[in-house]
Image (cartoon, rainbow, N blue to C red; front, side, top):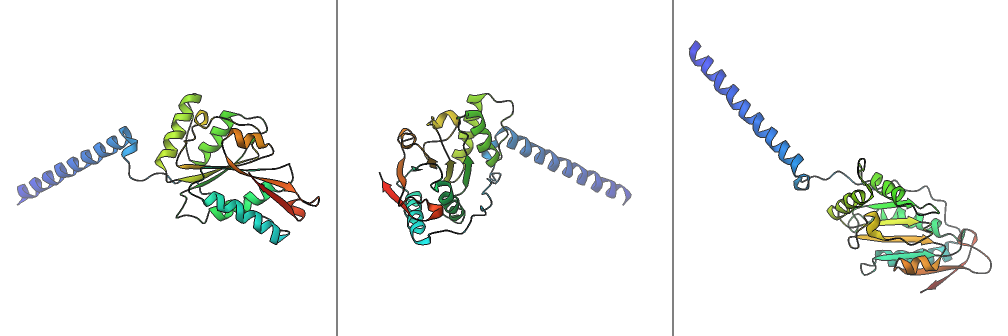
Length: 221
């Protein structure tokens, strides 16, 4: 009996060792082939903005409805809202951003980036990588773009909002794919919308008032 117990313990120990080796091999395979993993790290689907109550609700609501309809239109891949500073572009887009967070069946993620006046590819890459939970350390600019591009392509389609863009740039330089990622931007310069190949809406003052203070006129291009 004593010999039998020793034999059983040895057999169980050998079986456990084989199981551990199998698990270690699976972990190794996962690290060698990260694309084969089933579960992706979650993309930040940001917190809602603490927006102020809409002023001039009828006019502002119409503006928002027109912009939101274009953003939700599957045939529109890039969309821009242009108009002079202080007219209410960001104000409206914050409300639209909050709404897009609820469109979970349509968009897998929504990212908001506030642009700097002078376009900086590294800064933009850093902002996007932060939202995608990416580590870009030890990568050059081209490598960073490739890593961001790869991550975007792994994800369900989403919306990238670029607020207050001052100049056009090449999406691929940053790592933003042409498809699967809807670009929505606000800018003061109509030429930026055209340079980024955006369908766009131009917001203009009406009766000397902005969105925040009342009536605004839209000119759809």
